[in-house]
Amino acid sequence: MKLSSSKYRFFLCFVGVLLQSCISANFREYENATVRFIRSTPLPQPRAYMGYCSNGTSTFVIGGENKSGENFDNILLFNIDREIWSELTPIHIRAEKNINATTVNGSMFLLNGNESKHDENIDDIDINVREVNFNAQIPFLKDVSVNPQPLYKSGLAVSKNIIYAFGGMLDEDTYSNTLYSFNPENSTWKQLASMPKQMITYGATVDGKIYTFGGRNEKAVDDIFMYNIKVNRWVKVGKLPEPIVDAAVTQYRHYIILFSNEQIFIYDTLKGSLKRYQTNIGKLRGMGATISKDKLVIFGGIKQNSSGKEQYSSTVFVLGIDKLLN
Image (cartoon, rainbow, N blue to C red; front, side, top):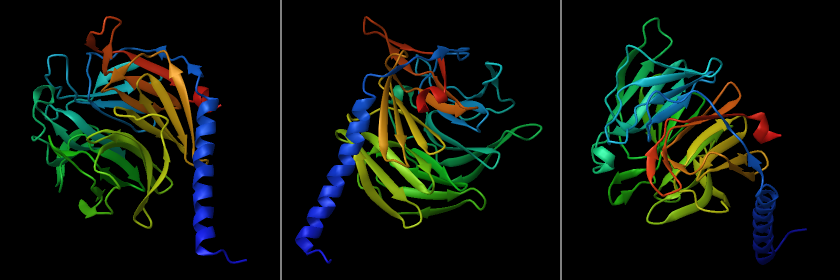
């Protein structure tokens, strides 16, 4: 039977509402659940707004700032089995915060990053794409490309060894909705379909799709968007139960995991469902999060104590990923 145009629109609307209600129902089911992280070996120094990534076995922390607003020029490596931090020597980067970092084919790639103290000026974004070969007998750092649009607090994701950079800020007044791909093999860039909104946002890739969660522009954002790499198109796939304006994001199998405002959010890309857990971590911003050897690691950031005073943190929290997915 062929539906009339009005009935077809009603059907699409009904399906959309049904999908949204499924996400909401799943969310409410886990609304009061709590998981408890254990503390591991702290960072050598308190820091926030660092770059971070994992190669699956080790966690890397890149740059960042201390409580005085001064930036670090080193890369730290966390051995999850031995719970030991070490410095990746003899590498020294430009001392920056807000660096985007990821690993591709045994190398680490660094994009963006800025120097200014406490982000007083965000116009000094690093234009160079840097490659860190950490598997060489002597690790080395080199510039491999120039970023066509350096951005403050851009998002970063990887699919099939291609790096995708999305969103961020051009200057103090202008948010971006651009999406670029970068191929590390031949150092080529390609501009792709723009995001539905100009914003800072947080995301990761699963099975050829980029998912972004919340963020901010002139106001807080609570949307979940999905970008299909194959067809070069963005669609809205849901809403968060509350806006997420500062988050650390990582990915495990078909799950995308965010830590924000002392809560863990887990998005199942196969089901389109969302879980939320309370934690014992406390409120943080500017922290990092990775998955290494099936463990979720959350570290650094700026915490607020009971009197409201802010402190830069060196604390490292660890939780087996099975505790979240069972």
